[in-house]
Each structure stands twice: as C-alpha cells, then as structure tokens.
Length: 600
Image (tube, rainbow, N blue to C red; front, side, top):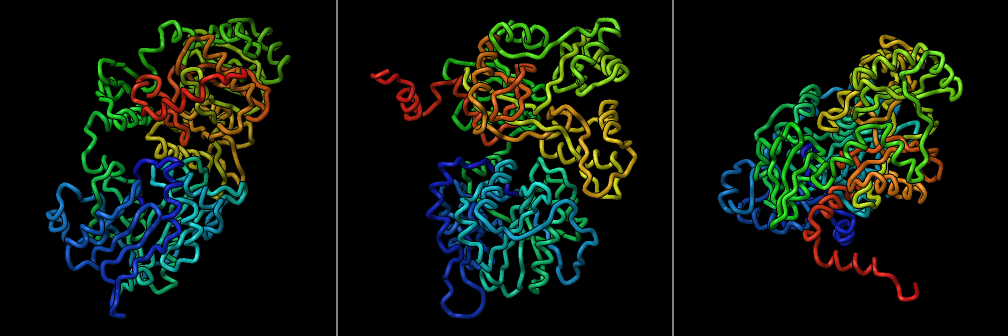
C-alpha cells in the first residue's frame, strides 16, 4: 500500500528473514469448517496483515500484534473501534495516521489508455523479486526477502504485479494484492492493494495508475466486491490518483506497534525536522538512530547540530566543521580545483577562460569538436551547457553562465558518462552514474507537457529537489534532437532534454559502486587528499564505470548523501564525525582487518 514508508532493513537483516520467508503465510486457526477464519492474519513478507474483523476479543488482537518479528511491520487492518483496541495496550500500540479508501469493483470500468513503453505482468523470477526490493528501498519501504516472493508465487491469497520497461527490461514499478476470501474466507469477498511503488528514476508517465488498474481488473475478474487500500493522510498525490480512479473513503482504521520502524508515525518529527530537505534528513535520522542528539538550527538551509558527550559538530547537510575554509574555497572555484588535482596526478580536460576573443573560442571548439561552458563558481548544475559545437551557441551559453558567475570557463568535452564518487574519510563509499533527463513520446503529448510531467515525478521522488527547468538550455537540447517544445514526438521516441546529468536539473542516478575500476577509485581518493577535504563528491567523465579512462570535472564540498542508497553514505558520515558511536564489535572487526599481516 502507499503507506509502506519506513526505513530499510539492511542485507544482513534480510538474511535473518530467510526462514520466516519460507513459512506458510496464512494462519490455520479455524476449526469449525464454516464462516470466516478466526483471528486471521496473512504474512506478506514485510510483516503480517492482521484482519481485525476476525477477532472477537481485542485482547487476542493485542496478543497477535505482540508476536511481530524483528525488523517487521505488522498491521492490524479493518479496525472499527480503534479507541477500544488502543485502551488495552496504550504504551504498545498506536493509531496509524492513514486513510482507508475503497473501490467498488461492481461499477469499476477499465481505463481506455493502455501502458506505453512498458507493460504490466506477474512477478515471475527471483530477479524480479530483487528488483522489487530495490524499488522498495528507494521508496524507504520495508524490504522482503526474495525467497518469500518466490516461495509464494503460487499463493492464491497474494498477487504480485510488476511494470517492465519494454526497451530495457528493467522493473520500474510494483504492486501487491490480497484476495480476502482466499486469505480468511471473507464473507464480503473483498480484496486490498498494498505496496504500490514506482521507481523514482522511471521516465514513463502513468505507471502507478496502470498498476492500480491492472490489480483492480484482476480482482474484478475474480468476482471480488471491492478493493481497499490504506494511504498516508498527507500523501496528496496518491490520494488524488485514487479519487480520480473512483476510490472513496471508508471508516476503517489501521493500528500498528510502537517499534523503531514506525517511530516517526507515533512520535511526530516536529516542524523543524519536517522542514529539512532529504540530504539533511538522512543524516539526522542516522544520528538519532545511534542516540546522537540532533538540533535543527535552520531547517530551510539544511543546518543542524549533532552532539554526543563533549563533542558537538555543526553541519549543513554533509558539510561540517571538519571541512576547512581553504578546502571550501578550492572547491568553490573550478579553475583552482582543476589546478590542485592536476598537480596530484589526476587527469583533467583542457580548459581556458571565456574572456578571450571570438576567434580563440571558435578555434577551441574546432580543436575539440564539442565543448562545455560552465561558470567558474556555482553548484547544482546551474549555468552549465554541454555539447556546444558552434560559436553562436557558445556565446549564448557564456551569457547564461555569467548569470551564475562573472568568470566563465570553456572546457574540452569528454564523450562518456557522468560518474559521481562519494569519498568519506578518504575511502570510497558510493559511486553512481548520473544520467541526463529523458522523456518518452506517446504520440499525442507535447515535449513541454512530457517535461512538466517528468518534473512532477522527479520532484515527488526527491522531496522537491529535482526538476527539469524549461529554460534556454533545455530548449537548445530539444532543438538539437529535431523538435520544438510544443512538438509532439512519436510514440516510443526517447528524447534527452538536457545534456547535463545533475540531479537538481532532472537527472537520474544509478548505483555502480560494485563496478568501479580501481584506477577511478585511486584518482577520486587522490583528488580528495589533494584538496584535503574529508567528505566530498568527486565528478568524473568516464567511458564506463568498469574502465580506467576518465577526466576530472569537479569536486563538491556538500554532496547529497541521500542520492546513493543502498550504499551506507549516512552511516559512514556519522562514523567519521562520531567514531565512538560505532558499535564496539564493528570497530574491533575493522581494526582487525586493517592490521598488517606478519608476512607483509
């Protein structure tokens, strides 16, 4: 369901769930052979769905919820009198802040529009299950061990659908359905929708709607009377979708246990915390998890102070007191950064100042074929133009860059992919390819509207941090592909609408930490050491992550750690700031690994 938002369990936690995943998911407590199951529940992998209407005694329902496993999230659903249930265990249970919506399947009519560029199918392999977990993780949902999906592929009570990209074969969305009659002999013959999630990097519009409709049609074909779902009260976009499809509110409630997964839902986070962006929030969450006091000093700016014992560190997202003013000034001026890392043996592209005559600019373009125009100072990709191949476009790009910085640089364009490497304490923690924003034509929507839809999805997936600006650079890129903003590209036409891959201008990010060539790691660490910066995002242009060819682009003194899940960026950041917060057993294991062998 749309409320499945808690934190991610780590891989070792998933392994502990292997034995639970292989157990029969439906309880067998009915003995009379007629009517609904008594005290019924269904194991869904992330936890149990406990059907409250099958419990006559609220004390028994409380006892059932107390059986919740580690790293699991049980839900008592269809609670009619939550105040009565909560009165039996007020210190253990809480009323989930969600609404229940219902779709009447007897009057539901299938949509006329079919998915374009992707299709909906059943989950059919363990690889599918792994991809579903990847999407769960990107959406901060509790993961399910892949063995559970696979062992329950023929379970008549649980149904899993996935959306698959027709071109790449990637899984880009998922939804789970529960058939209530098959789960507990429901006399109402209802059904419910759970764990609707769409890959935040997906470019196709309408994936969530297609998944909901496919599940509704699935249950309608099986003569179910209705399909219910639970959605967080403040999830306005999801609620708007459900109401558009004909769902309406019904007076049923969900009750959960007060565990660490659900903590934000029953304690509240406070106005200051709610004002933090995702890059600050991921660090504050990790600090609080370890018992480190976090004081938000300016939510809008992403400032907070972390304190443990006698140590206090002021942060702005991933920028801390540990980064010196000198290191910041080096990163602030791209020309200075280039000189510093080049002196350390890091490969850099040829670069000149834009304050030269037109003939020199034209000669530079002719020498390199394509160039990059960027402000000497700036961040978040503002003012950068890539792939400039003529003087007229170069002059326009220089003027646009001057809006960000008085000084503008021209740089040789390296054909390849944009790679961001997160280096913390001079160790590589994460690496990701950053890809520019792409829209896919459907044969009847203009480029402008496709971009606006993509921007809405990217903003929703990143807490408002990522949008595609409809500016001169976007218009230039669209024009270079042979279209205008108001043209309608044919169905299936993929259009790159910006050449830069910066997340803040609509780019997407794809983890490649396990594929990075050692030479790229060495170069990134060398650059960080040359700048003497303990936390940084090093940007390279590369032929491929597993190949050694690269050129250095820039160093970011405040990299967005939230962009690199599932890698443990926030954990390693807090390790650096508060090493004593690392569990003793972990520190001992690390020290043992770092000791040189006697034969070395």
